[in-house]
Length: 170
Image (cartoon, rainbow, N blue to C red; front, side, top):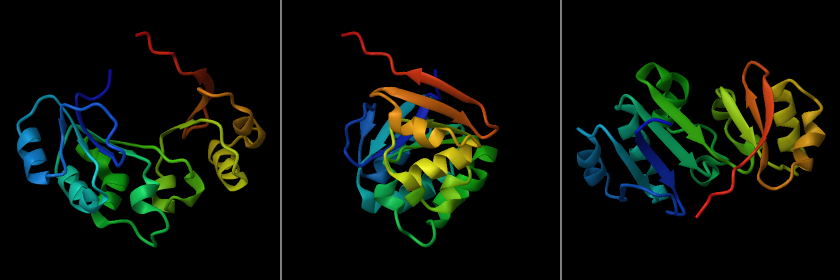
């Protein structure tokens, strides 16, 4: 069971939500007094303002699906996102990100992970970074050999576990 207060950036607009909106004023009013909410924003043009809004919150999970769609190849991060990355935990902001190309992410984002879930990776630069971040050179080959839906769970302190996603029952 995760945080019951979630704001999700999902550029594909596919994740379930109690509210889907790109109107940040509507999002604010939906969330300001809410004990429980799960809001999805999908417009990349709204991302900087969304980060600024999340930065002012407490006890919230901020999930960014495919973060490369909004931060890839930038020399610096938006100030609000950078603050969430570095000090969000002090405000009880949980940050979850997904990416297909971890090595191409900004160093500030890559350097602050506490848990990483890795699925099959074929790109050598990404595999090298994952192995180095985990402190286990054998992962360089192992992550390329992962079967669909199988993963490695890696923590910043070097713990590595292998697992598989459970199939949903309909």
